[in-house]
Image (tube, rainbow, N blue to C red; front, side, top):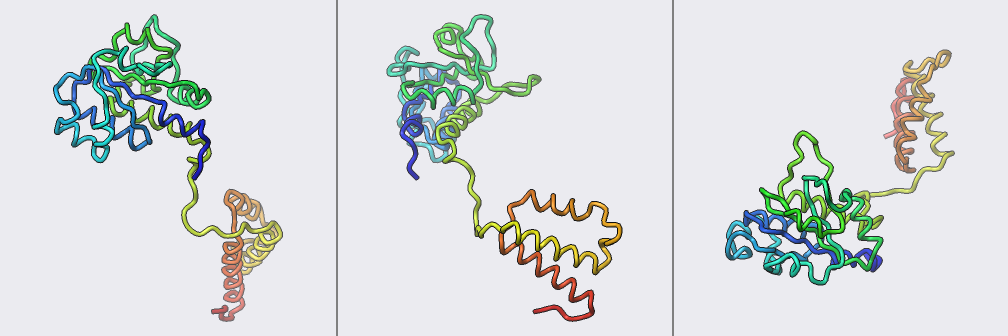
Amino acid sequence: MNLPEINTSLFTRLRFILVQTSRPGNIGSVARAMKTMGFTDLVLVNPRFPDAQQDPEALAFASGAQDVLAGARIVSSIAEALEGCNYAAAVSARLREFSPPVVAPRALAGQLVASASLHAALIFGNERFGLPNQIVEQCNVLINIPANPAYSSLNLSQAAQVLAYECRVAALGDAQGATDVGFQGDAAGLTQIEGMYEHLERALIAIDFLDADHPKKLMPRLKRLFARTTLETEEVNILRGIARQILAQAKGKPGPT
């Protein structure tokens, strides 16, 4: 599948930055969240344990995304982490009185896709303390994930997964749309469908399910039911076969085999 360059380029120009992460498992989980959505650029700022990329817990939680974990860069400052980026988005559940504009993940993803010149970074803070105000104030926007106001705390990797997902959906656009699996036949024509309705109506009358003198709204309701689907020719034929069998049985004759 060939995708427009402006969309696919987001996968190479979006960076995930983790600041002072406390749990090695969270770093591994973020690497996994990134890889499942097609992102690879991970930077760690002063992780709070040695050998972050080789830690057994990090490796276990990466679960198949060890390549993203191994490719992560460890730096000592946010300035170093942001080298090569011209746009930064802080991710936080805590809103500040003085902060950059607050946007939702979906709005951010759309903006990043629309502006191919943006080399952006998503910055996630420490699991317990979040991001320092001084880092938030340096960013272009503050990302707040809409959540249950009574309990809005997301795990670090969960937050990363939400952002990675929204960015992937925005980047791929219609190409990411779900496709039907299995056989797909030709759509039935209006004449075929109308013939099916007439056939079905005769069958329902024959078994006294429909009173021809007082039909009420049965057939209009059945038409509305089928209108919510896209009937295929073969499906119309099946329904007409059922109606044919009903009529044969109603006349006391064996139906076709």
